[in-house]
Length: 481
Image (cartoon, rainbow, N blue to C red):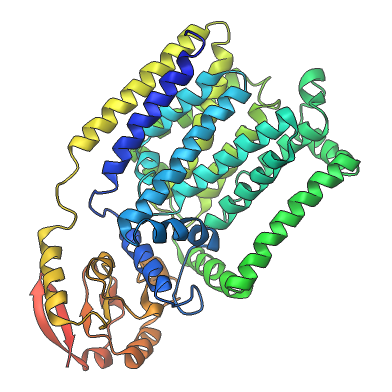
């Protein structure tokens, strides 16, 4: 029984947490992106192709991973959130596999508890955005590669590459790629790195990799990696066209980065997530305390993952609070592994810390659960919904910068206007002139400015075609003349 206790504890903990998440998917919309992506997916489900007809700012991995479950569960925001919950739970379970493969199951348990305590990470577990998916897919890739390292079954390696590619194509996230190849070195070298402690420096890892690349086993594994990666590219080319994807997704990000103001946003956001900030600082301190271990497996790949993620978000613009959730997984895992080294001779203390952290995480999650509002839309938005349904037919198009109104009323915008985000407007991807052209062609029935974005696009020529219908919260709702 004592031997099985960690598994029983983890299973009960994850089951309770999953039940809570099923309730959290009912909570009100807290981020406009959720309405944008739900509207986009609905437009695609109606036959408007992604990227070419329906604007989509996210890479295709986000669409292909969530869209099938979105259709399966009912084509609503709740359906999309449920898909995110399922993938996120798979990521948390992968932490248990990682802990087991690292010979300390409590590493995975402690990591799960700390992640749930992180406000930014916990929010993304049930929010229809891509950040939580990156964490989940990367952790799954890591776990699968460790399984392949142990028993050399090629299916684990294929799964690892699959989820590595899926992680990249979900958010163009490359943070784990160097770590993947560091682990691959140890596999190609038959774990000589660990057993003989031969390699300590980054330079030697690079030399070792290229020397192992020419071996038969190395050629085989690299060839499999290349084939699966090319299959992803071929699939995206056939479905959407790679040039279209790069022009929209990468072009939008480059334009946004070029026009964004450089400021210490990362630290400002980390102050809002004190748990994650504390974990990052603790991981840095433990890295210096256990510095003789950091260039050895299994710490080195996690350290690379952590440092690369932090460096990227330090410079990346525009940066939003939900982005820092992608720092949680690598730094929490780094902290948990280093703490296990510090408490190597006190495993019972380490296990007790894991139990306390997970119990605290459940209690805090329960408190959040009791505070979930009983409404999905606030009263002023419910009023707008009634106006929309009474003033339009099911086939009429409406344009609003509060896209959850599109999904709630099932009145879609023109596909080119599925995304009215500040990023798209500020980057110059959607200008007043372009907006006016789309309006002149599509003739939507209602224009509903709500949070300031649509007002940036309205021109006198557009407003000539409309008349005020009603004013709510100082927002004038326009109906076509």
